[in-house]
Image (cartoon, one colour):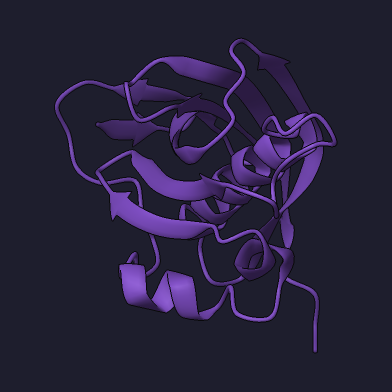
Length: 154
């Protein structure tokens, strides 16, 4: 897919402006909530990024089901990383809004989230994140909106 200022056009090149090497993405997540919850990046396509999260004691709510907040962490993680990979080095993306609809419960296993670009504009981006269980059934659908800002001076 090709990104044209405000819309995605079929049949073109990758949207990424930074390295999408999976090992690098997993390394920068060390010592964060991402590592704590066991989230791992697994695949990057021309306009999407994918990652997994275990459904276990780290991600359960008190009734032994996947906590909705853990799903939101996975969704926001994938969308935020994707957004930041799709901007130039002098820009960063910060969250404006995230929403999630929890469709199906799950007690154990692994969920896979896929963040796909909906809109990549000059000042905002929108990412759709679908989280599925191991049977490819939808567990949660989420949408993340980010602001594109100048990278803060260090």
